[in-house]
Image (tube, rainbow, N blue to C red; front, side, top):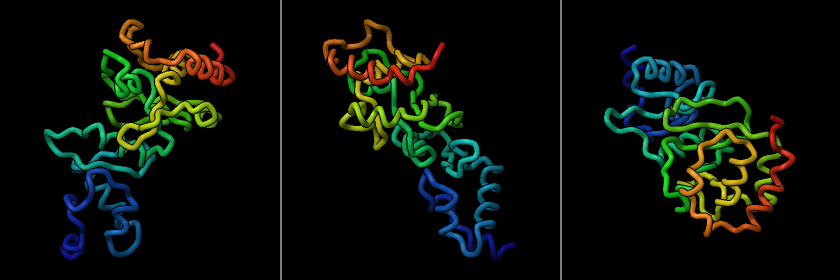
Length: 196
């Protein structure tokens, strides 16, 4: 047992966000050993899992919560289809005077959850990504590498699905939104709207 511990990589040698496969590459032998090490670290509270059933983790550093960039990196490794939406997209693009309390994100997968308290996930139906690409619904620049809705699509998506936080109406800089793009985005989402 002592020899095994000597062969273990130090937790500090791993990036802050890592996957089980990252650990497997650093350990000799089969994948079971990496799983055992991960379980020991989880039990010790030195790492946390980003989402149930997903083998992506982050190192716990006391007094240092994950930065927004690290949070989005963890989300992208866990959910490749993650997109910043709603008021979170508006704030990060400078169109809202009200800042979000939680990072609002949407996924193409259904029923997913995550263990990051600063994130709220929303499921979107099949075809949502396709619609986003067809109508140019993504912002030219993402957010720390993650896809982000354009301001017009963020407003249209929030109106269509009604499950996200949005700033008060007077907290949005409407003069910077294109009426034509907002109308196109709203129309494109009509077939995907949930029946209430």
